[in-house]
Image (cartoon, rainbow, N blue to C red):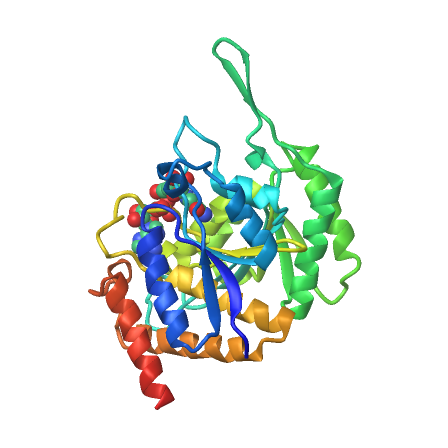
Length: 344
Ligand code: NAI
């Protein structure tokens, strides 16, 4: 099979460390990939470029697929989020975040298997903020019929393809009657086309309580942008933390795969970050290429990687966030050894 060009964006903080580890593992799986490296975030600024350089965007448009490390966004000041800009510019409207228990990773619950679908382009994440008058500021929540309807249909299609049973919309339409009201109206409308999939709506505050009480009540969650952001981290906490939750940002043309977590400045440069969430995002990417471009060779590589990390975790070979002792590269090396061993 020919090599597939894929854009790789190392990002900031722990990004370069985990990206290097993940590239090693994916290459060891035998995946025929030519990595095309581009910068974004502080890494780009440090080189005197724009925070999201045109070349990076053009490369993603050309090759359609990117694997991305986390990018830092300054808090309360400075440039707007690279991540938001990337998702909006490329119209990567569907964020997909599967949250599952992993073998050997002991958490309060043993039965978590939830797929989060987050609308990625509007909501309170629009970043439209104004100073109304001195001492008074305002943030705008945007909802459009087009985006609400599009993400709802996308979620139901995903559910049908993956044989999921139920979609739950978490919302606050009792308070935000227009914006969240539109979101649930469009979701409900979409649900009528998918009689085989159950549909429910829960006000998000009560939904949070139910999630931490009994996550098995949920199958798929459909959320507007900000709720999707918050609930993703909450759900990560149900299965072992941010080190184990992957993600994909998918549009009609391009797809960018990245972990749910951020650049983790508190542990950056120490070689201790868990590369698993980004690696699992890479596995999603390989399966996406198998599904959309017929690259069955990539599906086999994805399976090899998955088996390697499931076995490693089961046998206690883990990074520190999961109670183990391994560093970022050590964990990657363990997976590579396991794959080499099984392919002999
Ligand atoms: P964070 O996800 O970077 O870190 C939260 C906590 O989880 C920290 O204690 C961190 O050490 C830990 N953690 C995260 N990933 C880990 C990993 N792979 N292995 C072990 N521990 C891990 O969230 P935080 O601190 O809120 O954000 C830091 C920066 O990241 C901010 O600038 C934020 O804007 C950015 N960010 C970027 C995202 C992206 O690029 N998609 C997503 C979320 C945040």
